[in-house]
Length: 173
Image (cartoon, rainbow, N blue to C red; front, side, top):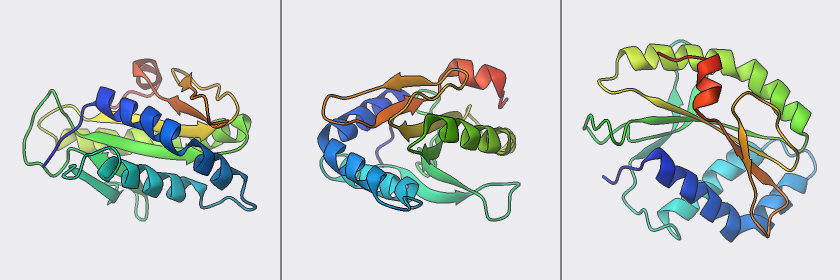
């Protein structure tokens, strides 16, 4: 199975947004919009596995969290390859998509403690450090510790990603 680094995953996210920007903006503007998170995950994985050329990618969706019944990691990469490669550790993602930057921040604040707690439990059973990644899609700024914003020319929606600074505030190890 093909593994992926955090840097490659970030590059894939930017390439997907460049490729699919009009559809991302359209999905964001649909009334109700509650399914935007799931739509984005499915569209991104579709892009990775087809256009992105990662046909044998090691990923798993909706992975149960160890301490939260009914809660799941959105997508986990490099989990099933059977190797403990510290250069390509498991990457655990949490996706939040919201039209309002302040609403995205509120959702992050609600989710981050549970996400970090679950990652600490996951880390205990992992031979290599696990890597957390918050993926936030919003047309507005998301003012959250360590979350940086990236934009692409044909898409009004911005990509906001966590960084090492984020995880200093919410340590997982």
